[in-house]
Structure formats: structure tokens, C-alpha cells
Image (cartoon, rainbow, N blue to C red; front, top):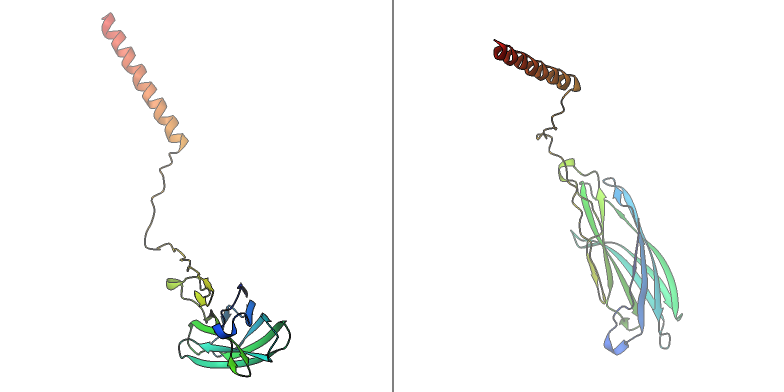
Length: 202
């Protein structure tokens, strides 16, 4: 699954205004995984910096949102280039229990004096094992927030038919029964007419 998020700018500390921004962030990760399986989250990003002062570097952390533990860190170089596309890969081992595995990807940008931008974060969910039929829902990326951008995803509920209920089907009459009933009514009308004629002539 490829997730693409484009942001106009990543907010910078006031003293370093317009120094660096992550203009585009693409994540490629599996939608499902088996318990204990190793997975990789591949990240490609376009970083734009005002190259007039120092050498820039970056780092991408993959964090387990349940334990808040950093599962892996991947550094990358920006250098003195005004625009660079960096690609990194973060690996992790899926938990042993079935269910949604919620992770957060955090991008940092640094210079010699320290971090020069607020971290950009993206939250993802990977389904571990299978969903039970009774609680089946679509599992999507969790709503994320980053400085300057807001993304929301509404879960889509899947309606299921209750096997214990039955719906009455409309009554359909056989054409043979309709014809027989029509003939019977006609015979009764003829017999009644003949009887009335006989009484009148008597």
C-alpha cells in the first residue's frame, strides 16, 4: 500500500524561518502481516532547504504507539543541496497477538546546532492476523496531525446480515389455481342464473 501526503511546508523555529521543509512524504508498507513477521516501512521524501549556512541531516524513527518504543531509526543526508529526495527503510517485528498494530513514523531534520524543524509525523495501522467476522471493520490509516497539515480517515463499518432473522417473501399464486377458481365462479353464476329462470317460468 502506497500512502502519499503532500504538505506545503513544515513549520520551522522562528529563528530559522524558511530554512527547511518536507514538501512530500511517501510511505510504502504492508496492509497485513502474520504475528512475529518482519515488516519494512519504506519512506521517500522530498526535502527542501535554504542552503546558506550549514550542513543538514535527517532521521526517520518508527515508533510503536502502544509501547511508545522506537522500533528502528534510519538517518539520511541532506547536505548543502537546496532540494533532495531521500529514501530510507525502517524494519520491525510484528507483535505476537492478532489485531491492528498502530505505528508512528517521525521525520526529524538537524543541523550542527541541533534540530531545525518540528518533527513531521504520520500514523499507520497494519493488521496482524485475521479479523473476526463478528467485529470486522476496515482498518485504515489512523487520523494524523502534523504542523501545517491535518488528515482524517473515517472507518467504514461493514453491515452484516443476522442469520437468526428471516424476511417473508411475497406470496406468488400458481396460474393453474387462478384458472380453476375463475371456472368455478363462472359455473356458480350460470347455475344461479338457470335457477332464477326456472322459478320465473314456474
